[in-house]
Image 1 (spheres, rainbow, N blue to C red):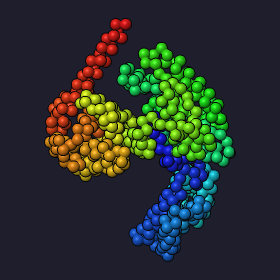
Image 2 (image 1 turned 90 degrees about the vertical axis):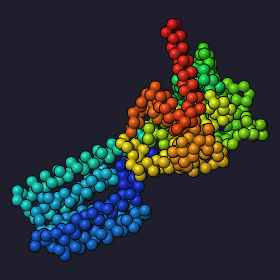
Image 3 (image 1 turned 135 degrees about the vertical axis):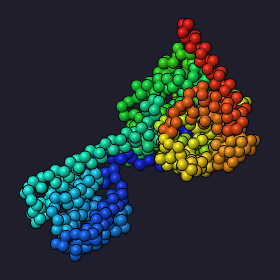
Amino acid sequence: MSLHLAADEPGAAPAPSASGGVNAGFDMSVMARTLAALFAAGATLALLTVALPHSARASDVGLLAIVGVAYIVAGALSWRAATVPGWVLRLALAWGSTLVTGVAYFSAQSPSPLVFFYLWVFLYSAYFFTTREMIAQIVYVGLAYAGLLAARAPSGGIAAWWLVGMGSLLVAAILIRSMRERVELLITRLYDAARTDPLTKLLNRRGFRELLDLELERARRGKGQMTLLVGDVDHFKEVNDRSGHSVGDAALQRVARLMREGKRAIDALARVGGAEFAMILPDTDPRDAFAIAERLRDAVRGEFAADAVPVTISFGVVGYGQHGETAASLLRAADEALDAAKANGRDRSVLHHQALRAAPRVDAKSRDVEGERFVAVILDLAEAVDLRFSGSARHSETVGRYAEMMGRELGFSEQRAARVQLAGRLHDIGKVAVPDSVLSKPAKLTEEEFAVIKRHPDLGAQILEHQSLADVREWVRAHHERPDGRGYPLGLRGEEITIEARVLAVADAYEAMTSDRAYSPSIGHAAARTELERCADTQFDGRVVQAFLAVLERDARHAQAALTTTNAV
């Protein structure tokens, strides 16, 4: 049993800050380049003022001088964008306000329309700077505009023009400030969602790993203790097989609730795999953590004692310092302790001991820890791709489940069926390189856009370039090939296509036809089955289609029988 965590993967960057500040939540180089673009745009507009017919009272020399200075500032900001400090951006923006005032003055026009030359100052400072810095910029612009009005007094009075102009710009600044806050709130929510398991609402694998890195760093600096519990629900596959995935999902939610209720406020709980949970216990001795694991284990056994499939859980317990110094070493030790719990009968907790390192591992000969961790990272990426184009991480999971069902029906061994299930979960990973505009386009794709889509099986195979996925890689590459030779990317036909790739093709097509997408609503299960039969031996392998339809028919009969029994009771 393994946590399947990318233990050697660097922690991701922290979430963008929602607070203000020239450095808060923004890339300084982006800010510098944006300001450079504004200087260049302003200089170009001023240059047009000189080039186009204009008042004879305008000072061309003055305008050209401002244009030259603005282009120089734009070039300097672009050149040093990666290293420019925040104070330079504040100074540059104030200098930009000065240049805008100069353009308005040397143009020799009534300043009323030229007030909108200041708009970029308001919008930039409102979006990128703190509230205090934004106010300072606005005050400076207000003074500059007042001086301009005094020099070029318009009809109607200076005060009236100043109030109308500054009021209009202030409204724009408030609007952009509000939009920034809403965008930051959305980013924060998306950040949280990417680190939350949708079923149990606990941290997911990514969120757990980031928090583990932070807690390890805290323990190192404070020379304190930290303990890690890892748990795996025993024989969980039997729950899904006997009672269905909905019952299995409900069981995982119940386990999550029990563990949430049994932890302390300072502890962090995560679901890091299908039926695998992990808990970080700061400032906790391993023996105290062992007692917590035993209490949780008893709670789980008691909760499910009366169920049709009694559920239990096994735990491995490891402590920072005693069993490992890094996330990778702690997770390896946790795997060893959990393996020992499973090997000794399950429904038990095991505190890691050095002797476990020399003990035979469960399935040691076939175990490839490095490969498992690579697969864990790739599965995370596949889920992220699913969320991008379907709004759910269930598409590839469902394709994998369908593929496994067909594999069993076709006589695949347990191991081979599991491999084709993994291939189903990874089949669309190449879409990570496809732009959102193509993935989510509601209209028919152009030839160029379809050519981009047709590359994703080959890109997926390149991403899966790892010795532990040699078989899966080729199945993913060929899952859009067709028996009639009209598939892509290789144009294979008939028996040139592996049976596993033909299985993936049917599973992928059926799931797509029965799900709502931006470019196509669901056609329903009945119509999807008809479409599979119609395209058998052309787009799909006929034998695979018949196997899948047989599985679906059998499942429908079982569901109807279960419903009849429930109604009778």
